[in-house]
Image (cartoon, rainbow, N blue to C red; front, side, top):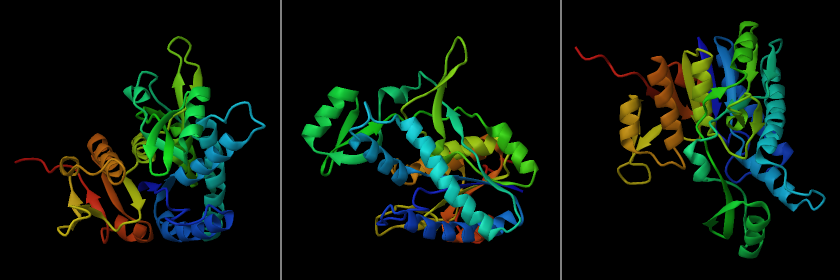
Length: 307
C-alpha cells in the first residue's frame, strides 16, 4: 500500500516547546519511532508542517537591519523544508537502517487569480506593537490583523493546484525510498500565462490540503493525517464532546469544524476520498500504525452506494 503521511505542525515543536535545535532533534525521534513501522510494510511519503519554524525565520529576517527588505516568505518556506527535512531524514535513517530516505525540496503551483490573494488570512511571525506594524505596512505593504499583544502579519492561503515534483516522488518510491517532501505545503509558485515561467509568491499553502493533492497525484492508497488528538471530535470543547470514529466526506463537512483547527484536516481527508475513492484517517502521531490498521483514529471512507 502507498501511504502519504501528513505530520502536524507540532510534530517537531509541540505546544510550549522552545524552538531550539536540541528540542527538535529530540522530538524527531518520537516522529521516526511512530512512522517507521509503516515503512516496513508500505511505500511511504511524509509531509510536514512548518509554522513554528517559519515564524522564527520571519522574525529574524524582519529584525535583520543588514537586509534591504525582509526575505520573501516563499524563500523562508524553502529554508524550513531543508531544516525540517534534514532532521526527519536523520531520524528515519536511524530508525530504518539500510533504507533509502530522501528529503525533496517541493514546489506547489497555485493560481495567480486565486481569490485568497485578496483576502489574506494566515498569520505568520510575531505580534508587533502598533507603531512597528504601521511601519511594516507602509514600508513593505504587509497586511496585518489585530491579535492579543498587537498586530500580526497575515498572508494569502491559495488552494494547491499541483505539486510540481510529484513525478519525481513516484520515481523515488519505485526505488524503495521513503520520501520527505511538501513541507509547509510546498513553496508556492505561480506560472506566467504566456511563457509558463514560474515565480514564487508570498503566500502559505495549507499543508493538509497540499498533502491531499500530493496523495492524489502519486496515486496513494491511504492519506494519514497525524495531529495531537486521538481522533476527530463532534461538539469539541463542550460537555457533549464525543469521538467520531467513522465518517464520510459529506458528514465531515456538515460538522463545520473550525478553520483554525480541525477544519483543514477534515477538508483534506474529504477531498482525497472523494477524488480517489480510497481511504483517509485522522489521529494521533503516536498511534500511526494502529490508525492504518483500523484500531485508532477517525476513518474517512467513501459514501456507500445506495441500493
